[in-house]
Image (cartoon, rainbow, N blue to C red):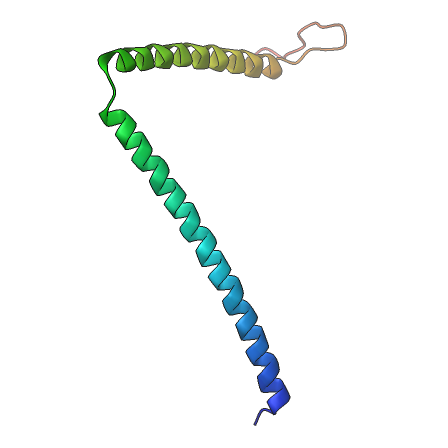
Length: 97
C-alpha cells in the first residue's frame, strides 16, 4: 500500500497537470474564437463587396501572379547557374557526354 506522503505527492502532480491542461484548453478556446471572429468578418466583407471591389481585387491578384512568376523565373535561373560547374578562372569545366 502507498503511504499518505506518496499519495499526497501524486495528488499534487495530478493537480498541477490538471491546471496546465485547463490553461491550455483556455488558450485553444480563445484562439478558436478569434479565428471564428476573423472568418465571420471576412464572410461579411465578401457578402458586401461591390463590383468595383471585385475588379480591384482581381487586378491586385494579377499583379501578384506576375510578381510570383518573375520570382519563379529568378529561382529557376539561379538553380540552373548552380548546376554549371566553373573552375577558378570562370571557364565551364563541365564534362560533356
